[in-house]
Length: 344
Image (cartoon, rainbow, N blue to C red; front, top):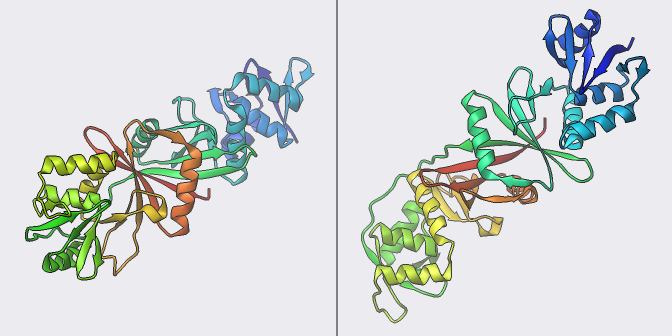
């Protein structure tokens, strides 16, 4: 037997106690506007009408699906993507409701285990908004799901969180040495220093008995007073000149260095992530014992992008059993924001 509802303005009102029980007690549809009336959102109404579970009237006239759909499209912003996600999650057995207490969050799970934000694949990714929402949601012990609807109506779900990543690699004390600055890297010719830098904290890559190190490693070791810098003609150069040379060659290295230094403080082994399409890959333990757990991409605090970039990064990271983190740099902190694929 169909449930009966009356369309009043922009919602559907259910009055029969039996119908209210079927909708709210079992399936968690609607919200009570008084003890004897249940109010359905237009998204819920369209879903129930599409499923053939409700009959909706306005006065003496019955409302058909096309009429209700047209009303919903005109009254609810981004209706089509919200509806597709609502329908998909309901079909998967999730008890979700429209969340109208926040402009960003779209749905909440009835037992408040997670919240859902819905985006189109063409919507902008605003990382400040995502970070703020993650913090608000996790403060209450909840999870944040992000649902992306592509142009064919398929939905990809991600869980978004901020990780406090740490490793087990202690910082060592190294003797001071010298490196030769080349065009795209630096070389340490001191065999003893090369050996202990690589063995203790996996700096660089062996180059025979010597060690080749990246620009960011060179800067880090220089700032920690482990290395002096010379040109290929063995002329020692000042720190200011050295930094100017590297900044001219790689303008974004200042941001990368900030994150690199933070990751080292967190006791991680940090290597280039170029082959994985990211700035760094990071190990929590010795690379001889484990694969890199994280791929880390450095972004500014006000980073804005497209969801296609996240889709590509997450898929690549998962294909090599790693997690992708966006290292968002603000004045006071670095947030490592994880996007992970999930199956609801």
